[in-house]
Image 1 (cartoon, rainbow, N blue to C red):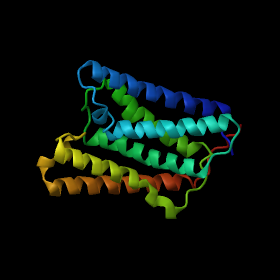
Image 2: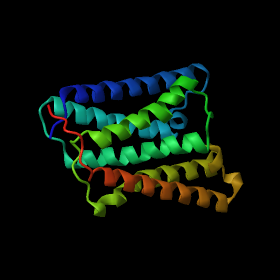
Image 3: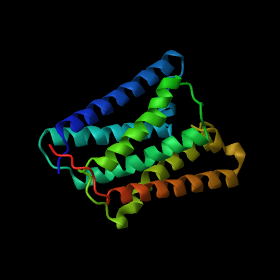
Image 4: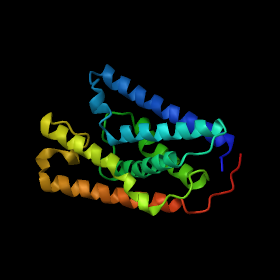
Length: 204
């Protein structure tokens, strides 16, 4: 079932707006003398927001073109929704108020946007039912991100978040990463569960 045209338009516009916000924040950092894109996009928030935007835009464009939602695209959306839940939870519990972004931009990226993608997933009936056997697909992306972060932390000393600093020791790093992965699986379980709930009757 395709969603109303207005929903598809909002998806595209919101996705483009958040991409625009990320570009603005990067240019702002570049103007302040910190233009390294590998640092800026090394943050899980920024990477995941880009992926979520891409999934929303692709889904919205396909719907506006009169095409049905693709199962693999729904799976990508599910992964990004689960990851955005973690973005919101981690920022608002472990690292609140950190970073150089203005408070309003942080609120959009860590509260407003994650809430919107979760609500969109819960109420718009074009996602289909996700099979439990594919719950594992939520893990490769964050595992790759963690591997890159650990490699950079051990080589050039850069990590996106203080709790991932190598000087905290291997035990602390392993504990935090295991906790993040466990939280992600819990979030993904909720997202997969939401795909089984009846959605409000939204039609084109």
